[in-house]
Length: 273
Image (tube, rainbow, N blue to C red; front, side):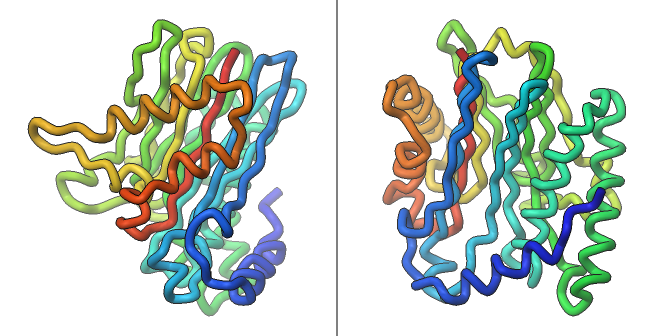
């Protein structure tokens, strides 16, 4: 079933009525825990200074779903140039989580996910034709079932993992972004060419981190200098604390270096026991 696009309208109205403060006052976060699976999921979405100074709403969205059969989390970043990109972000996340709930086989997941997003977008256009055509948004998603981690990614953003031996690896990078300065979105006609999928053994990892470009652009990687590696390792290290929660995650990504960039900045962290 395509998501109910009418449920998105209050997002925009609520945002208009909010005081335009940047930072933690606009954090939307929640955690999910499943002791049987040995899993905790934390999410934090923070409005950037650039949007807040203009009285704009946050264009990032993240959500988590944990049931007795599976766990899934998704993060989406709406394009700043799209009039309806925050709707696209919610649409992407909701559709991904619904596909996980339907227990779609990994081999069919990519095709059915994009078909479902296309249907959801068509419904959004029908319900709100004046701007829904511009529901441009990226997406990252992680789906845990039967000991496997199924990762999905299109557009900018990054997915990092920490293995149980302590090593940190980039699982998925922003395809082609640093070469062409172009990102990709789920509703584009060539989305199937750019939607990346990867299957991992969940037992190999104890942490997984998804983050939007608003986070990592504050920590550049250049010749002879890699600020990002230390920043990400620091997030993983802090997540080992027993009192770690969504507020702690938000504070870790709400640094002065990130704030200088000015964009919305969001992250989802999975803690696997």
